[in-house]
Length: 274
Ligand code: THG
Image (spheres, protein in one colour):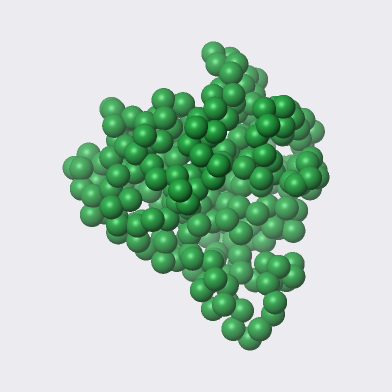
């Protein structure tokens, strides 16, 4: 499972403050802790408060790379902010460009731009594409799958390998009126998306979106993750510092026969996935 650790995000008050104070230590400590917890990538999102998003993205990337070599996931829907991060990033071990919709009202070519930037960043650069288009986020299963299919076919047309593509069916908070059918719709969409191509594209979600505003955040996140893994989810942007969540990942993989059972399977998983 490809865990993209979510904590370096200006949405969190400590990170927002660190960005305002240009305090590298806070960022570097989060990078180190999440790497130790088994993160495959570190998400890097400047949030909405920073006036200079491009400069902030560059500063975050540089600060993280001073202390750790975990691959980064540059998180912004603005191609210019991603491009700023790419200038500073070391892509030798991989980098993810997160995220682009299929298309946008004011930018029909946004997916092409992301593919172009990933190609320039090198063979280990991947893209996260959202099942979203100029009409917004679809609420049902069929439109999510239809947009995913268009994304996959566009990637193929451009010669962009499906193994470098992550499809994100977009998880939204369950605690919103009428939103409770969405997790089920997303699981149904995942079952179909996993068969869109061979080799299949990766699939990821912003897991913590699901539980925003709820009282049982980590429980909701853990259970949804366990439901999604057998439907082909092989990645998540998630709280890598939640040890029980990471144990759910290891246990699901063991139960799906991706890791051999031994009495110490949790320890074995932790030591082989960092
Ligand atoms: N898909 C993709 N990328 C994404 C998302 C997605 N990137 C951002 C986001 N969604 C995933 N990351 C987070 C990070 C934090 C939270 C949710 C998703 C979160 N934050 C606390 C909150 O809002 O309650 C902040 C609380 C605090 O300040 O401590 O829940 O879907 N491709």
